[in-house]
Amino acid sequence: MQLRAVYKAFNVGTAFETEVLHGIDLTLRRGEFCAVMGPSGSGKSTLLNIVGLLDRPTSGKLQVCGEETTELDDRALTRLRGHSIGFVFQYHYLITAFTALENVMIPMLGAAGFPNNAMRARAAALIDSVGLSAWKNNLASNMSGGQQQRVAVARALAMNPALLLADEPTGNLDTKSADAVFDLLRRFNRENGTTVLFVTHNAALASRCDKTIQVVDGLIIS
Image (cartoon, rainbow, N blue to C red; front, side):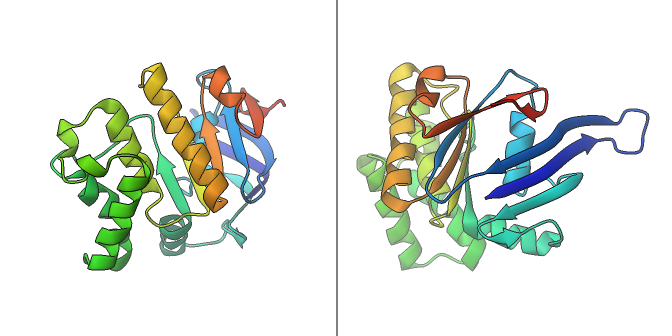
């Protein structure tokens, strides 16, 4: 994954135009586990949204999984995002009326359009891998915050993405649950070679990553 001279501004061409990212250069190699740190409002989430193809840079180049994305249309971006990028957010965003198993199946349903036994088996294996075998048929609404976030990690891995983006995934969790979620991300990173970009304010967790990027006022300072 590479960003070259990436700028991002909002309300472009108006009196309220605000530039949030000011020429970001960043390279992540396959299998790296990288923390992103910085104060609130520094541009971390904007950076993650651009890398995750949820937003477009105002200018600059972005290459994801070997594909230059700058000129791709929305359909191509959606396809690349759905097959190559997984997301874990600070809030789990599970469908509370669905079971854990059904929530993990959602990305696969989006790709195939209908459920099948292979999807169920894949989802069940992921639920097992995050230590929730006994909970796979429980509604998400009946699970603890830590359990819900572990389901969210399993869901993010459903398509076996090359790149996993985690935006403060432990921010709402107690220390024990935060460590468990981080350890899951680290394990999948090591076992599958998944590249991870992990936004956090937790210096202790950042110290366990391969490297840490400091973002301040829309610039990478270290």
